[in-house]
Image 1 (tube, rainbow, N blue to C red):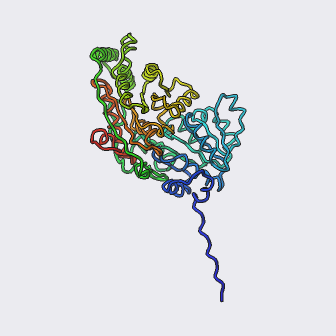
Image 2: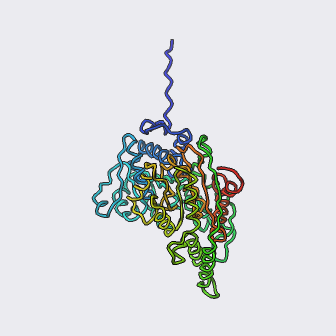
Image 3: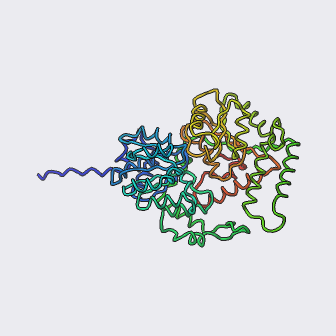
Length: 472
């Protein structure tokens, strides 16, 4: 009798090769993303906020380290470095360095850890050192919150492309674009060669420009949508986190106090009179005018010269806090002046915005999460709307006191609460002061969201969820 030959065991998948190193098993959709992108030198992990981009990209990086790569650099907004460090401390067989601090402190650091964590700004400041000491190695470079690279003409994008040439790259973001124009920057990194140049991209997709030479109409967005899917995975939490409660979107239109409304109208008229008389008004002046008008809505005391004047929007927050009983509330506002005012008015609140040091911001987040008596946190979208985790365990109510500038900002801010671990329906309220610039800003937010939805698959349209009675 001829002895039977033993059947060879199938080779492990990329995820199976590193599964034992991770502190928990990935979701099936994360595992599939790892296995799909493992063969790609350049990869786009466009996983919706709250679906585990950090864990998925780590698994992918670990697999590459098991192959021929030597080290991983992770670039991110500075507020995320601590969270990344805590995560990597749970991953077996890894070491990491939070590369931050003063120039002297960074100079004294040895760049020999398996994972190097740093902000985009530090990456640019120490570019020559990083190039000199690490450029010859086989690197994996992860760009977390890759919206920092969305402008192909920015210094961030230029330095990233220069440094990453020849290395493996991952772009991580749940909200890749705020306008179709951003697609070129991502395609240049993830699918190089798709467009020969920015001019090629614009010839393919720009249909019309307005008086200020800004794009007013796009074309061939189905082609751009296809190109955005090359070497990339797009996952929405609504597809995979099936037990995640829905979001309840509520527009809250309110009126300014009559005296405040008169002041608002007068100040806006005065701003208009300051524009050049005749001739061409450029887009920069219009943007400045819109921001000036936007700050008057909540800062009545400042613009009237009487600090005791309390805007109706502040009363709206007070009423909502009463309605929530002991519940917590996250409030987002765009302007530094507004955040300063609100934080000072609500004495027991904490805050995360640009004027506050990174150390105090982290303490504010910890206090809001850990202290039941701390019910209110004020946050600025660009300072705190991206990457922060943990709020979903203690809060399900978010209020936007000033309409976000882009749908990306809105979705990112909302995802601080609407993410894995949330057990209650998230109530997303948008405060809009009637007869002010906020009405126009809200409408612009909806129109921008419509356009982005034509390029990359997004959650339900904001126009529908705010006015169609649906949830996302």
